[in-house]
Length: 596
Image (cartoon, rainbow, N blue to C red; front, side, top):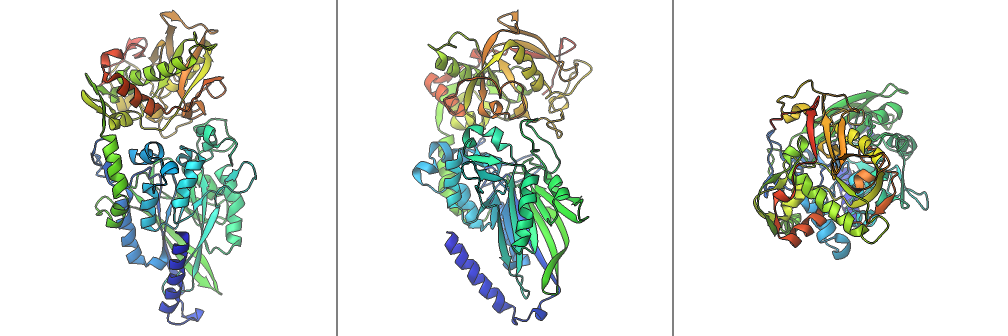
């Protein structure tokens, strides 16, 4: 594939020279205009389709999702600016996020079948020039990522990831694309990829002993001078890292998770940065490099293909060299664009296979178990997850030294729109309830460690002065040091097997009261096994205790598949089996009223 694209590029180069008419540099215009288009955090969205609802995607803001409509917008810009003046790049988190991704990772894995991954099919059809490695690219393991990488017609870049054994770059750090603006000498654009180092924590079981990570700022300091030395007229960084400095892993790593603005301020030689990871829409953020005083433009196009970042650059040629004179960025909205038939055709088979799988019936339910209320009240949906996790770990410990140790479990309301409804239960119902590809572990904790864990979880709530009633959005998703833009739902853990109150009239850190096991206060020296997902156990969310706790169970069982298997084995879900009696939300000891 790369040889074919190289041949096409070479042909385009010849055409570009011929189109210029003369070969004399004096015939070139003084100013040259280039456009770079960027996507990020696409997370498996090719078509404007919601696999969990089995219907076209829609939201209250009128957004569309998916690369098919993005491709149409990209083609419009290429026609407007000229193919020789336009680049298309991606900023990572591509192969995890929808059932389309999961199907080709776990049900019909490309590593076993050799099937074409739908995301490589779509992105090759769109002729991407380069992509950065996102943290979710490691979710299914390094071998899976390599199989996907081999299918791409463009390089995956990561200048801050090295091979653990050799110390050599594990991915190409950068690539230089030669652009051919009509009637002008070629322009060399350097594209440097960087990925947030948190993968060393979040996917520790996948990358430990194979890959090593450093910070994005450190990676930029190492490679930007080399990109310039290689002849780049323009340097654009594809940083899978949020704009404002923050981290969700506390002191576990010496580098911040989100640091794109810090890169711009501390590393000279950068013209623009495509940011990502935090799923925010930032049309243009301007930073000033501290050493040079140069203006550096940063743009971030949200997630799922809802937006496309557009960088418009003006270069001035003087004495045979280009220099960047202006950079401006904006966000393009593909919502009104028709899907590109080429992308639709390239992924038609994979899309159909995924729809067939997620709509297969695996059992039935005697009632509804919605996930939305789990954010503010004990609920059957999370009890269902916790019970399956508890049963799985307890069965694995049978006959061993921890057979009689009480097993507790944690689960979070990942998808407030998910849940199980009365009637047939399908794979997509379970996938909508548990939308991440986490695996299950069991770790030993003492009674003294339970309360700090729950206090960390209770930071999710905003402090109140009475019992309400409150709208759910007015008391949840509180900003914290670790999550300055608001704590996401997936960082609110509900613990089963113990009972407790969460008093949100109290300040964070002082909210857990009446913590008990089997009706008695939890003793500090009591011993428990906590069923926990790999993301949390590896440090995701910076929850205390679990990263250093002894691991007593780790069979690499995927939690979502365990839920599917449980439903298939039981045949019927009865919400009455999962009573909501473990915890309650209070204010000064009185129940809080929430309107939903």
